[in-house]
Length: 305
Image (cartoon, rainbow, N blue to C red; front, top):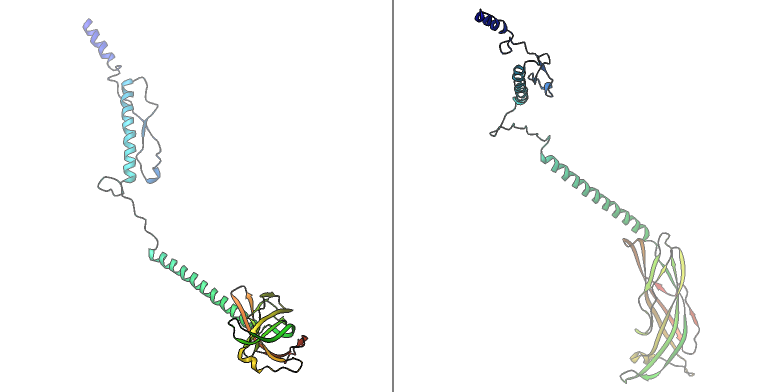
């Protein structure tokens, strides 16, 4: 009886044994993956909370299955997402090469075109500016400085016998005087710089007195009177002195000529556009050795070239 009871007990207790209890269905919850939009249907599988916690072996086994399922789901997702890409020899997926929209020649052509446009613009500016300067220069050419010889005042005049620095006997002439000029600038848009070459008082091609007009600036539409001091001391006349004649009282009339050149320069557009004019002037005069009066010149007395 004892043996029978024990077998029945064993038999009745067998179904309640946890090791032989029938497996309950396991439910898995599919968690959404970040790459689900790529069409990947594999996902991480997690055990359902409905699984009984009272079966430790079952929980452990299912947790391991869940972990394996989760990792396999990740790899399946990755492989499913990248399965369509080609791989190189090392197993890395190949990347597509992004092609440029146009060839490099187009960029070079554009740069060349821009340089040509810049050169053309610069050349056009230079041509236009040159034409403008030529127009201004042509318009300023008629504005010439008007110069008139007004008078010559004799301060000292002496002629006598003597010898030059080498001891040759000859007649010597000493003259000191002041020449006055009137200068008018008719230009309306620019001033002028006025100067001259040496002003000579000549007797028979021999300069007996010399002076120099100091350079000065004269504004537009202005008139100015300038003075030039002429000096000559004991100038030997050599053979030219033999033609001099003296009166009974020792007086002598000596024919002389004033010769000089006046230069004027106007800066129309800075130093880029300038107008230059020259005027050669020649004025004959006669000086009486006994008189030192002021000699006035008429407008027709002198020649202007």
